[in-house]
Image (cartoon, rainbow, N blue to C red):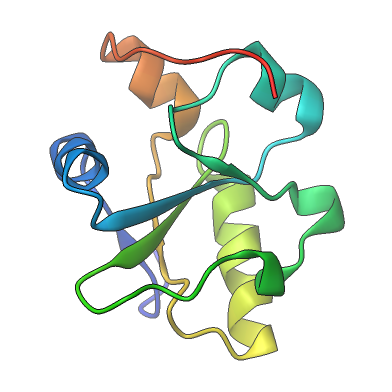
Amino acid sequence: MADWYNEISLEDLKSGIADKSIILVDVREADEYAQGHIDGALFVPLSAFDPTKIPTPAEGQKVVIYCRSGKRSVNAMEQARLFGRRDVSTHFGGGIIGWQKAGEPVVTGM
């Protein structure tokens, strides 16, 4: 793991979603997002990744990126970092696979 980004645990992700302290960003593609995503996740696909589409977090908030299994989220964080977004440095490495394996719900559609 690189020293400039962070992993978030499932528990911390769930509590951050619940208390709205996390801006969650899904970087999978449209078909994957439509098949099932974490409720409230913003859709910013890696194939057309634009760091300006990610809102700047307010005080006490943080951006968390996720994908299917953790590879594309790291790529997205690298792109955001190169763009100058130091606030896009946390991902849920388990991705949607880890979320669903833990029995967490997903919503479908765009």
